[in-house]
Image 1 (cartoon, rainbow, N blue to C red):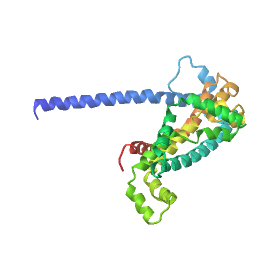
Image 2: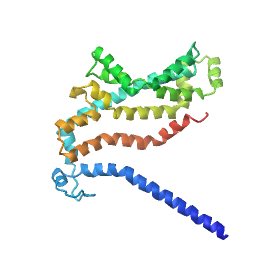
Image 3: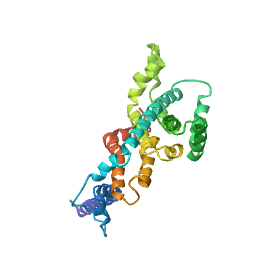
Length: 285
């Protein structure tokens, strides 16, 4: 091995080491808030307040904060409301998205391209304007403080329809024509051929919508003032104001951990599906 090859190899090793060190530092920066949240949640109220200098570990962990999250405040009720809202919204959204994407990608009707362009133009409208319009509509329909009022404005997404439409469009037309020759209906072709082929994208859309619903804050806060319909996102503010109080930080952190765990577990389980579904949009089938 020549001296030049040796220097090149050393530079390569140093470069990779620098990249790994940078990534490790960035990972610590990203994960540290989660560690601090979990650590604070297992500290007692007295132990936490007695710390003049924040401790980065505890020798006396406790689960009393997690017990209080379900007994002292109605976090369980907020949890159930969020599950209902998430499941119902995601299910209706999938129906709307699948049929809309199928119509734009496979069916032929007059003005289809113009309608699709106008449909995409909706993405240019600021979300605040849409929210104001939705608020007025829901209020006029007397649907405030109801699950339909929470769900209906979130059952359609231009981006998800566009994403699935692009995936549907990549399926060869020959499959469709062959299915029609065999007497297959459009609905049967959609459910038997298109959906199985585009399953990664469907899973990705489902997971992203679940995360979106679970983290929804502004709309539930705007359309509900009855605690019986609070979701975990705006319910946590109610807990802070009228539940544990502003000073009981460990109990608040325990509530936040409980709310965050389902999404973290969901992402860890389906992370490969999410990556595959997102990258599939730019890959020719």
